Length: 109
Image 1 (cartoon, rainbow, N blue to C red):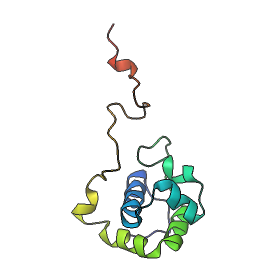
Image 2: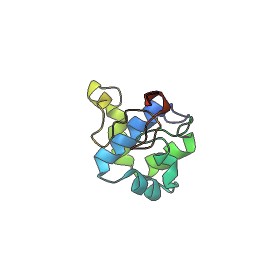
Image 3: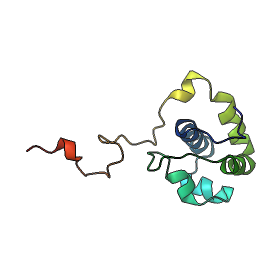
């Protein structure tokens, strides 16, 4: 899995989820220890709130900060078990709607 280019969101979320599992740290702590702003990771993980993904620079910082965990995630990225949803992810009935809010399409008239 080359990391010298910008990844799509799904792949980036998979990397973040794997790093969380491998390190036992939160996305915020992973970002801080990598020299990234926490929002760099939390805007796309666990539920994206933006239309972009991680840059090559951000991916490089993650790799440099967590070389062993990154290598493990890179090695398992193409295996079926890595496709499983992390237990850290929370299911929302309506994507991008804040928890507890009802989407307009769910309102009865």
